[in-house]
Every structure is written in structure tokens, then in C-alpha cells.
Amino acid sequence: MFTEKIDDELSLALVQESFAHQYASLVCEQVDYLSKWLAWPTHCQSEQDFRHFIQRVLHEYAEGKSMTCAIVYHGEIVGNCSFNTINYDTLSAEVGYWLSQRHQGKGIVTRIVNHLINKAFNDLGMVKVQLSAAVDNQPSRRVAERVGMTLEGILTNQEKIGERILDHAIYGIKKKPTSDTL
Image 1: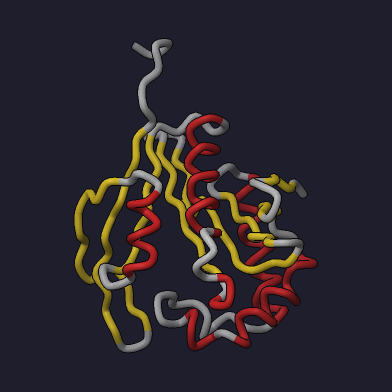
Image 2: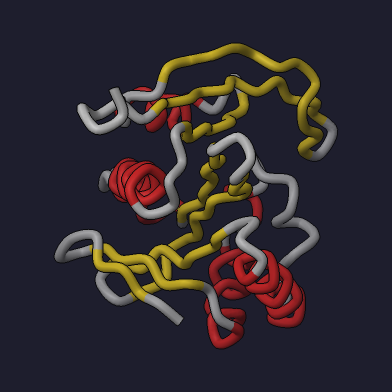
């Protein structure tokens, strides 16, 4: 397992099975809040559900297809972030995240997404990072804008959450060319 310190408050930890209990507790107490923009919380609430999830994403990590980490704030797991996809053919990665309701408004997700963008560009050799957010999910859209992403377009009928079918705003940022690449 690796851990990356982002700042004095915040770090990322590659998911491991021992996190399953904490994830299950967090999701069970906030299932209604998380289900507003995420499809999976109503279907993934037990420790066993999270063990299966963690095993799957660790396998994908080993294959270089994705990377999923716990968001650790002051030593406590408060959410999750990931490169949902890492595509070495197109040199692009897509970021995703969710955060406990009681930790909203502290700049956590903005710092996480900035860190993931830098990691994608500097460690993984990506040239583009993308973020997809439901059109009406203004907090996630503001995160994309705060980190310098540009709205690239709207894709209709992208996700079903409960009985709602959501359109997604697609944001992207490209690595700035350096003098070495000119």
C-alpha cells in the first residue's frame, strides 16, 4: 500500500481490504446524501460489498487501468478518489471522487483533484485529465472550474440515478507543453 501526503491535513492511501469497514460505515450513515449524485451507494453498503469493490479496483490498479485511493483527512477516511480510467493509448485519465457530507466545504476535493492532475501529468505521463459531473451537480462543476478545467461539452442521458436520467458536463485539462516538448 502507498500513502501520499498532500498537505498537513490531507493524504491519499491506496485502497486496501482493511478499509472496507470504514467505507461501509461512512456510506450507511450517508446513503441518502451520496445517492443524490452516485448510483452505487444503494447497492454497496456492507463490508463484503466494499471488499469485493476493493479487490476489483486493486486488480485494475495492478493492470495499470485505474487507481483508487481513500481520502484521509486528519487521519480519518472521509471519502474516495480515483483515476476511474487510465488510458495509455490516448494519454488521458478520468478522475472521480466522493466525499462525506460533513467534510464538504473545506477545500478537500479541490486539493485532491489538483493532486491527481499533477500526478497524471508528472508521474503517469498523461497529457489530458477529464472529469464528468452531472449537469446539475454544481459543487462538482465548481471543483472542475477551480482547478482550471474547461467545459468541453454536455453529454445527454449518461447516467441513471434512482429514477432520474442525468446529463453530464465533461471537463478537461491538458498538460501545458514545456520547452522540452516544443
